[in-house]
Length: 142
Image (cartoon, rainbow, N blue to C red; front, side, top):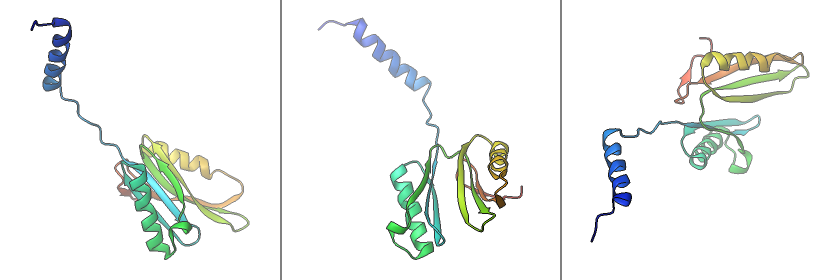
């Protein structure tokens, strides 16, 4: 058997490079929201859309006391980045929650919330929950 440098050498170089410069995976997480209007919300963070949405739906069902059909998927965002739950109320009385995600900084997220709330038809609008890119709840008034 003869040595073929064209086939073996690249493999050896790749193996050597992998040992000298290991690739570190960047851990990123996504945010999933499931919501039963007027009844409950579930929010989870994870790296799998299906598993994270299932977690959010389970939390929604636990909070609302309703079934899976009443807790539809509202949001999956990957990577989650800086994220917020925004309460919005129309001047006619209707109210709802909206979500922003994927922002690279808290400051940019807060600017996006302010822009979203700049609407003459809203009598109330504010972030009621903010999460870091790791999924850790943060004080809203910070």
